[in-house]
Image (cartoon, rainbow, N blue to C red; front, side, top):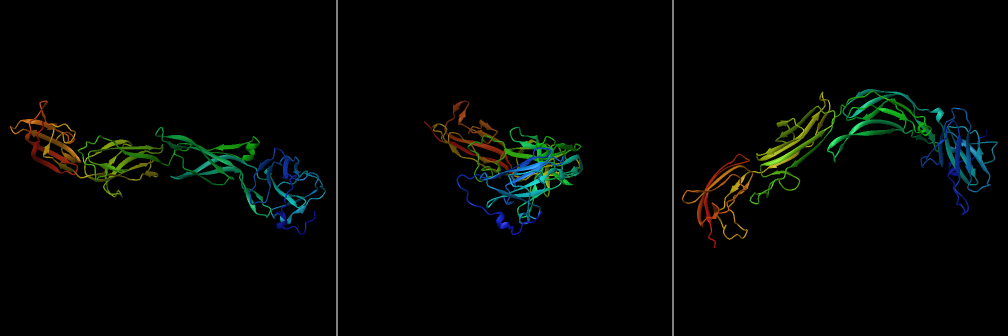
Length: 441
């Protein structure tokens, strides 16, 4: 065959305006042992079509060109990895059909000033088969696989001779775990990783449950109903993961409890003691060791408390800041999960006692005698009349005296209280004083 002279890459990309009656030219490839698979070529390739055929059986492969303007004569040429600038004309063809074409080649059909370029790759030169999948190692982040088989890179060439990869879409599948917020648990999920070609060594993300690894493909065998598949032995999980949540259990705060200026507002945890915090952690299958850790410093250089339960409720009664985090590990401690710390701030205690109230007017203002408090964890208050008679006994700082004695409104005058209380900061309160009931009608 004679080489074309004067054929430049600029000519390859020449285009002309089509008339209203002209159609878009196209190429269809048929034949081979199985139906050819059409793939969308790279946009920068200069190709209008890419076909993969199976020429292993010696069956003829044919390309049919549909012209922009029927009846217009065309010429055919072919090119290799050197690109279209070195295309060689194909003799003894004057129509729109190229019979018995040679695969692993690019072709150019010239119609007037217009060129249609395509590539035909021979699958028989790049077959895929997988015989076995061996697991050679696993760590906290990945599992290393060594497949036995063949199915290396498949490439085609652009009109400028640039190699481009054909994605074989080989599938690596295995099972892992995914957290489900609705059920608040981990559930199995099928992981599918796509491989453009079969490598000698494959690294897969570490699974969170016992699983095997299957490799199957490729996209061409799948199109022909001839998928090749192999599966590894089952491996137990090495990696560990967890999902944690910490929430403050709401309690009815009395309107005489001080809440301003502490950590009870916004997204912060804590406030006026006692504070109940719900700690919850859900772990994956590989976790054999679980622990909630409490520390007084954010670096956890010294852990003050440890709890092996993954879920628990803890009541904070001491003032100060506590840092809490969850830790989980596998059986030999080689893989560990360490969660971000949560901050719980408990305010210092305070206790103030009013010296007067107006229970008789029932206007909803100052109708009860109650202390103002914060972070009081133990409280005992006894109220006496001037005669020494005990008229009220309060055991919680949120409680108050409504000014009644035996169900009847007490007369106005002076009464006395004695309080013994303990704060979250360890402060002991021993208070006593007067209570004045202001006259009422």
